[in-house]
Amino acid sequence: MKRVLILAVLGLFPLVLAGCNTVAGAGKDMQKAGEKVEDKAQDCKDGRC
Image 1 (cartoon, rainbow, N blue to C red):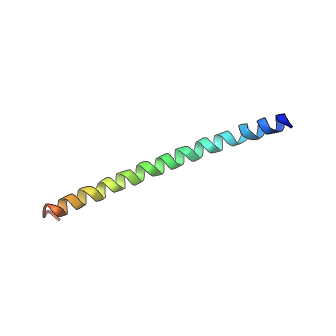
Image 2: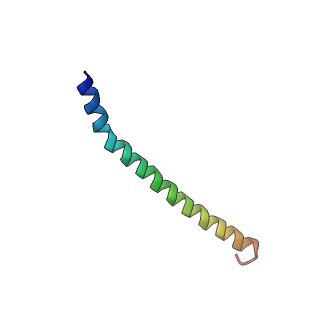
Image 3: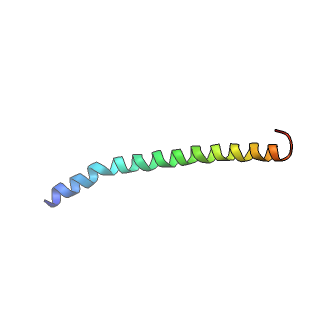
């Protein structure tokens, strides 16, 4: 039973890491999009819309 549990954990480990990388990448993309929106809002605030 212990062996099965260890194999299950080791089998899921790469999937967990891949999920973290995917979420981190999506967060970076969203951050860049938010920065673009902030830049455009600042331009419009200054009357350069």
